[in-house]
Image (cartoon, rainbow, N blue to C red; front, side, top):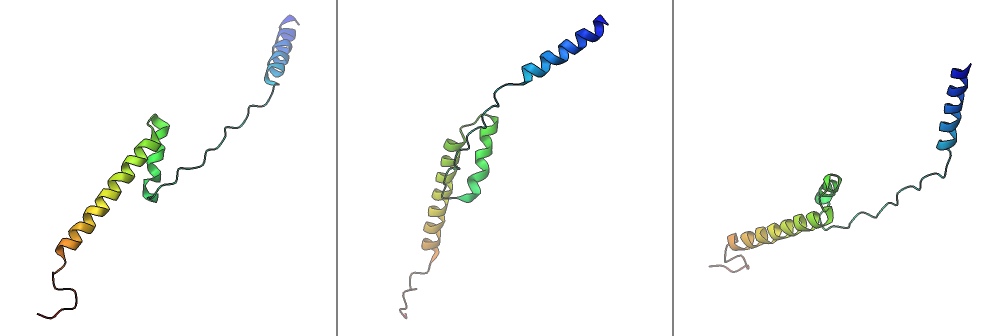
Length: 87
């Protein structure tokens, strides 16, 4: 009998302890706007402790520099007489 009453008291204590204010849902932050959608996966690095916004900004900068370099290379490879002139 004593054992049953201890079990019932334990169950009552646990049920009362579980009753409380509901925890607030975490506020969702708006995703960072980036010039390059392919760098969105970099934000997952925040889950393991990296500063995802800084990392994404650096990756965006590298992509921009690479695109500018590609444009320079294409301009350098264009033939000089492409302006419609005939030799």
